[in-house]
Amino acid sequence: MSYIGKSPAAVALASSDITDAIITNAKLAQDIISADTALGAEPADTDEFLVSDAGTLKRMDYSYIKGGTMAPLFKANKAGDQAIATATWTKFQFNNEVYDPSGVYDNSSNYRFTPAVAGYFFLHASCRVNISADFGSFHINIRKNGSDLAKSNQSNGDYVTCQVSTIDLADADDYYEVFIYHNEGSTENFGADSAWNEFSGYKLIT
Image 1 (cartoon, rainbow, N blue to C red):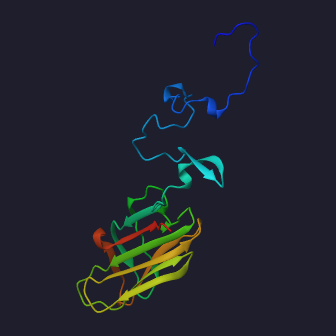
Image 2: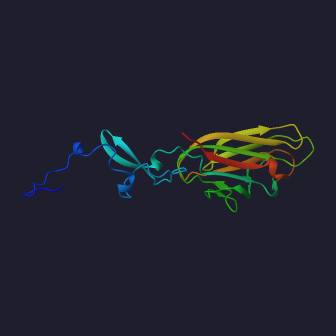
């Protein structure tokens, strides 16, 4: 602005001095949040939003507002037979991981699910005895930290399949295993057909 004589004193700029829409996106610094660029995908956990917290403007990561996920989750089944002695509760060795993206199922030694995070979990287990003769009583049990959690039983049939499901509130270090029991007169083989034998679970969105 041109002037004659002494230059005017500096005056602070007020919002009323700026015409609406005169500042464009091109004039904003790159670290200013604007609508200049479309995201085009689900935000990352560290992507930020502006929110008013009781009148104070704050930025917030997407991780605080996104919907919950059904993770961790896992599914394991049985590769091969397992001989189960009569009248003896025996841990069933689901030794083949179908999926376990969070690494929460041990399929090599303990054959157990450990959530690693707290929350409500849906758990399911099923098992089948591999004999065609009429079978006696067959029980399946999901145990939590070594104690009974959920049970089911079947009887009087051939190729009997028994299954059990439950929902449980878990801490990060709780663990779950599957035990089976039968009262047939001799040791019997269980497993073999993986489609009938599985142990699975996932975290519920609450």
